[in-house]
Amino acid sequence: MAGIPDDRPFDEPRGRELTKGALEALPPNARVFLAAMERRFACKLYDGSPLAPELERYILECGRLSPSSFGLEHWHFVAVRDAELKEKLYVACFSQESVRSASLVVVTLARRGAAYKPDSAFIKGRAARFPGGWPVFRADYEGYYDYLAANNLLEHWARAQTYIASANMMTGAAACDIDSCAIEGFKEADVLAALGLDARLWLVGIITVFGRRAEESREKIREPLESVGEYR
Image 1 (tube, rainbow, N blue to C red):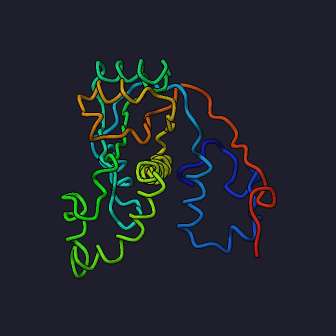
Image 2 (cartoon, rainbow, N blue to C red):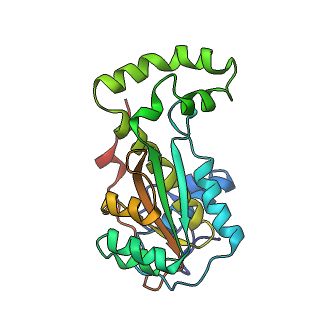
């Protein structure tokens, strides 16, 4: 099945919680999705070979289609192919080789807190897409905005949305045998400077790198469900 990184059958244990019978009871698309989840690991070294434009677009589309709080799509994706710019980002990311060797580096930005005021141009523009437009949206949104603003959580909330998009891009990439890693270690001011962006307007949410591995894949290690979750 596509997405499995070695020759073992899909139903052979890989630290998987689901039994063979449970897997077989799932719809085929669910099994394909799990295969992509199991294939992905935090790849630290890439071969640098370019990705086909349609694959790059597909990865970004996985981010674009991601859910976000109030459907605001807080993010802005900067997809970096240029070697010189990747070198600047490499330095800004504490010299992590995965940034320099990746085929594609996606810097996912979020807007600063002022953009989320209920009467801002950004909110009005996004709200216009919804039934009833901005007046209806504002009535639903304003109370939550007031809570976030009063507790200094606006920018934390905005950054959190970028992680959703990053996770979907990584899983989507794994479904195409493209490796990835999420980069949280970076000097934000240096990343914004490298991109020529105004730090008064933009936050760096997360950086995600993509490419074909130049290292051995690692076995996925996860705690059992009983250790990390429960039913009530």
